[in-house]
Length: 379
Image 1 (tube, rainbow, N blue to C red):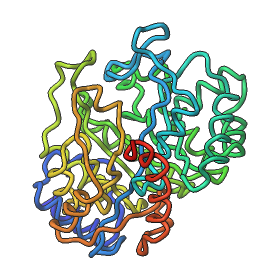
Image 2 (cartoon, rainbow, N blue to C red):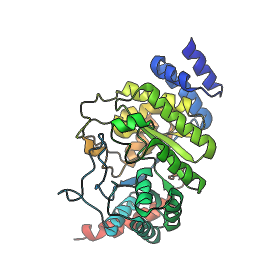
Image 3 (cartoon, helix red, strand yellow):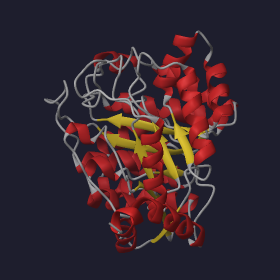
Image 4 (tube, helix red, strand yellow):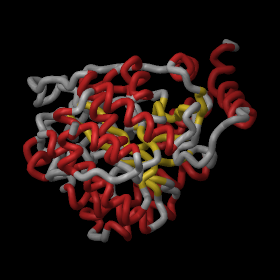
């Protein structure tokens, strides 16, 4: 009865508190949670439409000064397989994205000890000047924190300079769980404390940049820690309204120091998606985050509060380094959405443009397809 009264309260548009959210995760029936979350999702978004995005994760370097326990991607400077991509290599990846009707890139890497702010400014300027049509969603809070420390500048000064160079939005990477006790246990604290992550995001919002909010759960934290994370981003959203979407994903225990941690089940994942929708009453968009749980579970999440399937992920290196490698084409993405009972609609990174008419995308795609592949096919 208590769980039902909490769900009724949320469906009626009232805000639930942290204790009530904890109860939903611990005691709520999965299907009841999903039904309530879907009702709320339909009130906030077109009930008939599910959106998706075509972009590419470009990890410009795998060199990192930090050594988070959960990360299988990072390398030390000097390691045999350490790398730093050239601007030309990054440009090639952008062109491949455009050839596939992509509209954005998510650009982030390890925290490389040798890279100062001029590298990031030059990279953004290069991309803006050569590929003005691609959205530059780049550099998570840990990268911004490191730049600020290295250059002895404030977060605001760094973000202002990056924005001037061509930064258009900031990804939510590095959030993990925004509880420092948890962050210290998984060795995520040195790169960014919970307060620093939130401060960087609030600073970006106040400077006119939109960002995403993320959460990596299932790394041994308590249920209460997950809800505390959601409370912190909900409070920040109340102040700034700067988050475009919430993306939660489950930790992948492979090729890292936490390989003995039990992997979150699909049941737990769907519960988390549903409670995120119910609790985050000031977020319009919740992504289904199919990358870590697989396509079918991502599809099911569309009935548990998610209104967006995220990206087709032309390239992804961080999660795949943990041994998980799901791939998706645009055609498969649209099929999954259609077969779940919705109309698929490609969107921009910021949810501010929807591609009902794809003539522009087709024209750009054709140009870059011919540029990249015609010389090869004509041999």
